[in-house]
Image (cartoon, rainbow, N blue to C red; front, side):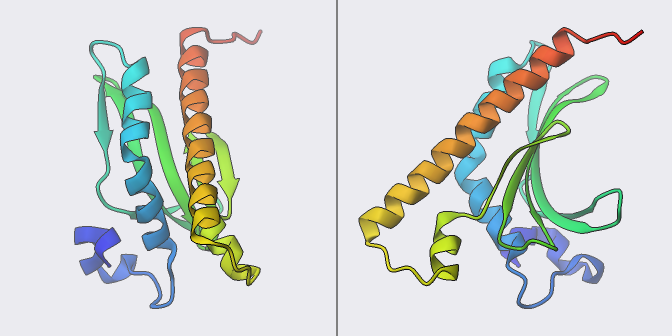
Length: 160
């Protein structure tokens, strides 16, 4: 419920009691917060600013399937320039995805969930190393995705 913040008071947006999607999004997003903000700030122009959601929201895809997400946006006076979102779909509650612009740049089951699903017993050092690798991979893919979206926006391809 803490992940939803003030949105947790609205009945229409509440998850099922056993739904861990919002808390998974919040956990991953909290860890990535400084890295995503830095990646967006690194490509920002003087008139642009980074805006970050503090709470997890329920959103819907075009096919009306629902997902939980928390997002960061690079905005200017005309609207959103680049959006980065950490997502967990209702249909795949153990998979963390990250969308940069309109592209999914990362989609994976976090190692702490995968080891539980596979009933693996790993040492604390192994678990910590797997977490570090998971977040390092996320950070790299987010930075690459942000750079790619900025370059595409700077050099649009005109189709005739």
